[in-house]
Amino acid sequence: METTARDFNQNASKILAAAERGERITVTKNGRPVAVLSPVTEEPVPDHPTDPMGDDDIPVFRSGSRIDWSQGRGSYLEGFGA
Image 1 (tube, one colour):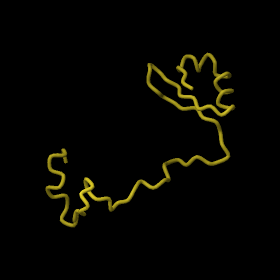
Image 2: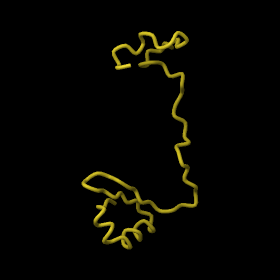
Image 3: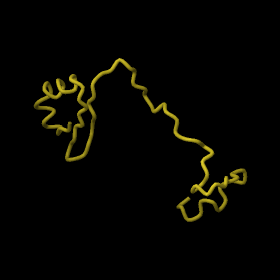
């Protein structure tokens, strides 16, 4: 469900009832999302992501070869704004 900040202000009790029923509500202001209202669960919500971000040994550009970073970045990132 999506609602505007103004609508949320005027209909907070109805919107909170929707969240209590299990709906997730995105509140927008000037057409862009500013908040998400979701039902409370028994599971604690972590302050930061706790899932793995991926393997550090992923081949660059899927070429299959590994880069030896022991000498620094060198020219590996040339042309990428680094």
